[in-house]
Length: 147
Figure (tube, helix red, strand yellow):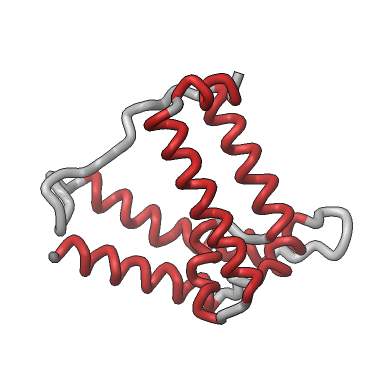
């Protein structure tokens, strides 16, 4: 139960920060990506500001034996850069550039009740489900798509 509350608290702070900095506004993200037009550097400033608490967090974690609200740290061990990772990253970037949303800001943006955000989140969930389906039941299809 403590893990659930920790996740809820952390997610709420993250969503509030995204909302306060207006990063839930896809026009702001698209303006950041428009390097040769009306470029808006605010996303870079927000990301730069996020490095400070993140760096402090990493310094604290390195000194801890285990997380406060869980039994162990779950650090990814796979450091392989493969074709599937590259294609997935390119798809993520293309979607981010076209829609101006990535998962965190889209979920936070649901609070505003716009149909565009709801449509994006629905498509995102469908894509996650499709990936899970292909990974679990049809791994040969996923491998064929990434080769």
